[in-house]
Length: 163
Image (tube, rainbow, N blue to C red; front, side, top):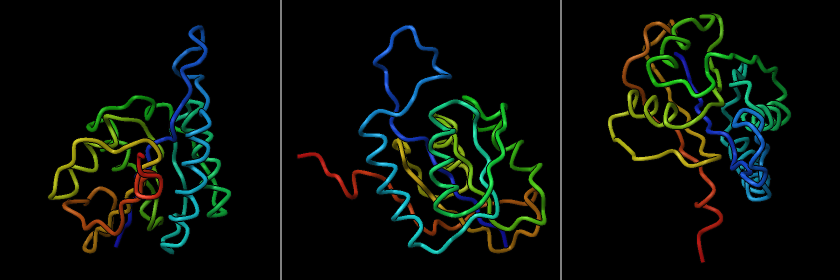
């Protein structure tokens, strides 16, 4: 059995117009949301063996927070920066089969498309700090992933609804 945890980076800042997209940090809301989602996801008791993240600053900060919560290491993969679903799926197929649970920290629209690829019910968007765990009961290899079962979908508006 394999488990894949998909997480979209926390909300980033657009305050500095001269800053490159790759180097955008989190904004205050992103930091708040990430703190809440990391606490909530930890309570689900699904701990990844490894976190694989896009190397962009906002995904790195998100991955570092999750790695500290789970006490696991991070690998950065440049192919995940703004990767489309097909590129993310190609990367997943290359995961080490000795690992049973991997967390990916990536960007939209790739994360939404990958989530929709593996789950029957489609959604329009995985929000920032959104985190989805998917179980593939029959899979013994990352190359064998077919339709999965959603174990949880956590996102900030569940805890911080608009007023």
